[in-house]
Image 1 (tube, rainbow over the protein chains, first blue to last red):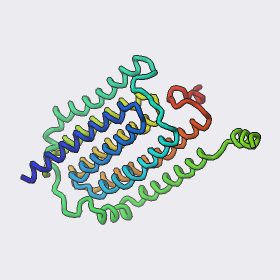
Image 2 (image 1 turned 180 degrees about the vertical axis):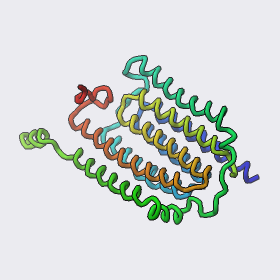
Image 3 (image 1 turned 120 degrees about the vertical axis):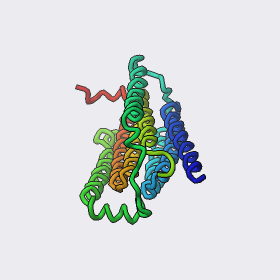
Image 4 (image 1 turned 90 degrees about the horizontal axis):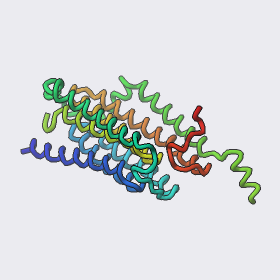
Length: 181
Length: 102
């Protein structure tokens, strides 16, 4: 009974995931696309939970669906909701090529799964109760993966500095402002 | 393992990645290109978490969290670029940004 329930929730979350992913790339208004991406991230968090990745699921909701998407929505609101139809502009072969390349990646992986990997991937390892818990993740981050942890902090610092530099006024802009006043 | 096996996770990850690729190539608005990039990064995260569960080691989840941090950094720089685009009153179109083309 529990197994059936897990399957039902998993398939619902996977369908929501794929459906909201298609919605993100097919909405005309970027505001609705960003809202659809929040749904995509939330349903991915459900899939993470069912793979016993509790901490990743929580981080997904807090960091991604919370902080990153709010920043996205702020920028979209700042720029104004400019419409951009999915099939507007661009040559015809590019639109065809986008669907061909997307479908090629899906089909390549799924064919590989169905033909070769099905037996190897059906039985997974046994895990302990603490698998994927915040305590386990924190312990690994401060022992085995300390270097990756420190490099991540440097990457975030560089990105923050880059964001400030991009937001600085150029000389031409400040000159135009002083002439106007 | 209760519920779907690893191959289901990898299949959904592949479908999401394909959707992301389609969005990046198809759409002209840099905002939606960035959103499609997020879909692709999340598809890779899903595959990482699925394989982490499959092999019973937490290393894949650690990798997924690092990918999340890199994605946050990418959003900061990408959105900064888009705002800089509009401040220079350039059109919001990835094909129009040809100043650096050789």
